Amino acid sequence: MPTDGDAFPGRGHDHGHCVRDAMARAESLCSLRGARLTALRRRVLEIVWSGHKPVGAYDILDVLKRERAGAQPPTVYRALDFLLAQGLIHRLESRNAYAGCIAPDTRHDSQFLICRSCATVAELDDPGIDAAVRGAAAGAGFSVEHRAVEIEGLCPDCRTGGDHA
Amino acid sequence: MPTDGDAFPGRGHDHGHCVRDAMARAESLCSLRGARLTALRRRVLEIVWSGHKPVGAYDILDVLKRERAGAQPPTVYRALDFLLAQGLIHRLESRNAYAGCIAPDTRHDSQFLICRSCATVAELDDPGIDAAVRGAAAGAGFSVEHRAVEIEGLCPDCRTGGDHA
DNA sequence: GGGGAATTGTAATGTTATATCATTTCAGTC
DNA sequence: GACTGAAATGATATAACATTACAATTCCCC
Image (cartoon, rainbow over all chains, first blue to last red; front, side, top):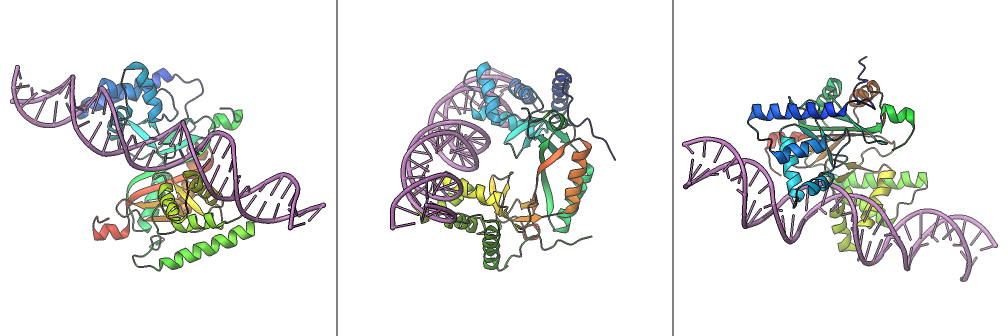
C-alpha cells in the first residue's frame, strides 16, 4: 500500500521554494515550447502559486489592480487560458478556481483532494483512479477526453487539529 | 469485464417512462421521509428530468417564468437545494448545472459521463472508481466527504454518428 | 523600419449564485 | 374556526464568475 503522505504540503514547508521551483519550470517549459511567458502571465502564475489553496479569477484581479491600473476580467482570464493551455495550472471545477500544477512537464488530468476546512489542495496522479475511470468509461462505450476528479473532505492537519479555518 | 452498455439512454427510449418513474420515486421517498415535495419542487424536478442533459438554474427559471408570474433566482435555487438534499438530483460541477438522479433511494456520489457533443449525461456507480478514490485519499491521510467525478468525452451515439449537436 | 500576428487595454454585457427581509402557507393545537 | 410557530415562497438587490467585441499596442520576422 503506497503512502502518499507527502501529497499535502507540510504546515511549515518552505513555500518560497515551491514558488521559485514552479516559476523556473514554467520559464524553461515555455522557452522549450516557444510559448511566450510574458510579464503579465508570469505574474498571474505567481499569484496562483501564492499558496496551496485555489485562487479565484477575481482574487487575481484584485491583486493585479493594485499593481497596474486598468486591469479587467479579460486580462485575468486570458492569462489563465494561456497557463491552462500550457498545463501550468489546473482549474478546480467544484470551486470555480485555479491552482498551480505540480507536474507541468506532461499533460494530464490530475485528481484533487480539497480540504473543506482550510481549502488546501493536494494534487494526485493516481494510476488506480485513472485505470478505474478508463475502464468504466470503456464499459459504457464512452471515449474519454477530459477527467475532473475532485474530492472534498478534511486534510491531515484539519482532521487532527479540529475545524479551524 | 462488465458491460455497462446501458449507461446511456437509447436514442429512441421512452422518456415519458423515465419521467413518470422519477416522479413516482420522488413522491414515495419524500412521503416516507416526511419531506414536503411541494408543487413548485415537483415542477422543478420535472424540468430537470425533461431530458438526460444537464439543466441550468436559469433554464429552469425561464420555464417557471412562463408558468408563474414573479419567479426569481432564489425560487429556483431553493427548490434545487431541497432536491439536492433529498438526493433526487445531482449537481454537475463542471457544467454548473443539474441532472436527475437515477437511484435516489440511497445517498451516493456518482460518477458522470458527459458527452461533449450532445451533452447527454450517464450516471455511473462504479465501485472500482469509488475504491480507487478512497484508497488514494486514505494514502494521503485525507478523510473523504464528497466526491465529484465528471468525465467529458463522446457518448456511444456521437462517436459513431459524427459530431452533430 | 514595415507588415502581420500575438498580446494587452477597455467597456459592456452575460451567466451563475446568494443575502436579506417580507409575506404566505401549512400542521398542529386550542 | 382562530392561534401559533415553522416551513415555504415572494420580492428586491447584489455578489461572484465569465465572455464578447473592438481598439491599441507590442513583438517577431523579414
